View 1 (tube, rainbow, N blue to C red):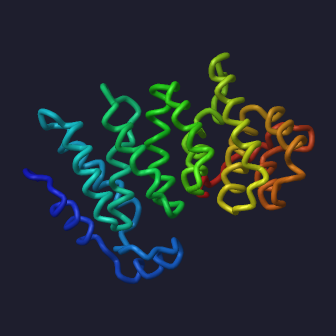
View 2 (view 1 turned 135 degrees about the horizontal axis):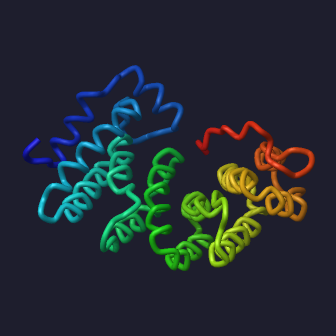
Length: 248
């Protein structure tokens, strides 16, 4: 692939489209935007190919950000997911353009699949520079539900730390404070995000997860409380089976 343009990228996605799957996906994800019906592994493979192609250019990061923004602006379901995948990478030198672009997408979030793929990219940038949590904290007071939700989904790595350092523990407590403030919010997706964070935390710090539930669990929706405690045993330790799907 010599010239990787938006047209070329969209054509590759359209070539993998499955009309029957598109109808099913549009219903499942409650999409009003165009859905092609491209299986996620295909989107993943294409985005990896595009990342490799663009990275070979002299200014690969700029080219990658440009294509990601064009894919996002196309408002095609799979194109937005591919845009997020293009920018999901742990180590990126001088990553400010990526961080700025990802932030600009947050107000556009309107469905969990797109939001969660973008949040995976945001997670990498937060891990690279934890001081960016200051920006994320502002999301917690947004009028936009998906922005508030993104504050928890984008910080999930702090729930999964097996041996956190003091500064990581402080960040974890900070985020748990956000979750506590969310508890009165009756929105299903917000309650699910709280449960997701606590569920992941329970596999690494069962005591802290149980303490949160002891203080706030009664005010959570029953489904969220149950989900949060799913992998906690009666003694407050994780159960042996901690395999779980992270789809929110």
